[in-house]
Amino acid sequence: MAPACSDHRSSRWLPVLLATVLIAGCGAATSGTKDDATIATRVKIALLNDPRVGPLRLDAHTSQGVVTLSGSVKSQAEADTAIAVARKVPGARDVKSALTIVP
Image (cartoon, one colour):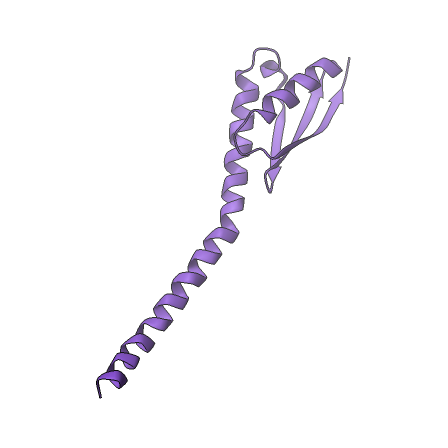
């Protein structure tokens, strides 16, 4: 009888274990979205705090760690500076530019 009882106890924990694994998997699937928002916010703050590109009011969107910068800059040098600032932000896997140069 003891083995049957011990099997019954393990089967009681199996649904709990499966639910824990499924919930953890869902959290991992949605955490990228939260991280993307955090990365985009950090990039925007870094851009605003940089004296060379802060006044330009550039925008940043992030998807799966890839940051896309948008807005207007006066020169390629300003675009390069903005890209360099964004690349320094932790979590930014890559930085793409949709910046428009308006001299």
